[in-house]
Length: 390
Image (cartoon, rainbow, N blue to C red; front, side, top):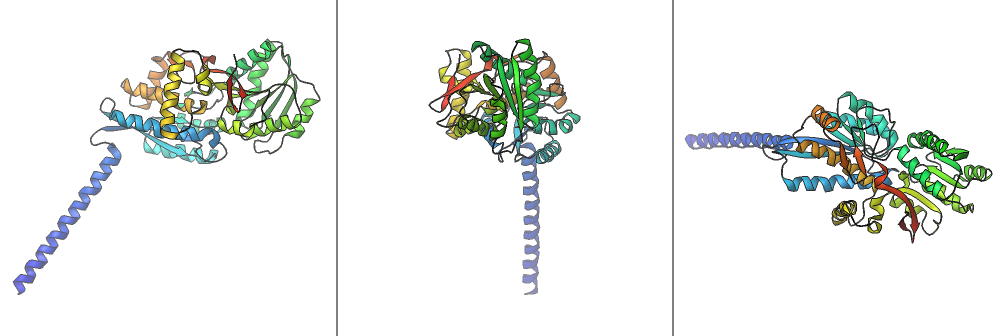
């Protein structure tokens, strides 16, 4: 009997040892899977910082959605030159402090590049930390043109201003009022516009500002009315941009209002629904792709829209396109064999000359910041949808 129990105990100890070793092997395997992503394939990580939630989600939600779409497309390719690309997305909840924390996290994860952030102020907040690590930043919001180590996917304030000037000249408008949010994006717009306005003999007869979280801009618009402008230009994002537009209509203005590209989204359309005559925005041709003449640009935009629709049953906007252009350029660099931040930087700075993106055409080796004007147009509103204005 003693021999029997001794055998049982020995067998039990051996069984426990086998189970323990198996558990260790499973944990190691999971760790390897986490590090390698797909068996023995090397994983190249790209970071993304978008406002999936919070007030700026009217811009950032489709960008966060696109991360899921591009990751699915990458996974379907299985690998690129034997390497797997993993996109790590951080929602900064429309909070610049959380965006800086998100940047730290992505750096610790070993990302080779970052796409983001949704807002201009946020992009400037994360830029020092990311650039100090030598990591390329594909910014999806307009930033200070003197910023280093960035590749701007969004149209610059100058691009916006040039398109507005064209609209004003076509409509024989020479006196305008300007109103902007008192935030990073809002205050950066006026210097660019002042420059091109002066060059084209357009006078700014009034300038007003409002807090980015304000819920009524009637006082500012009343002050503007006193100066008898022929058009009002707004530099803000939703929801502030839509509040200005609603106040503008409530006060009975019968002149055009032109908003920057930060208002070219569904959230703005919803804010001005059924009361939007004489309201225009600088918007991506993606928003009016069905109204474009046939050609390569239309084909490219249609394909992008259909891929997005298939996954989300809704349409992308120009903010989605900014993100997509950033990811596509990085993936192009990786496909060309560049797998470190330094190599990607070198590739983008020396190998990519003209790139035909969804947002417009880019020349990364020129002094021009962001896409050229060919991807954008002044958009009107008709039947609560964007109308291509030629």
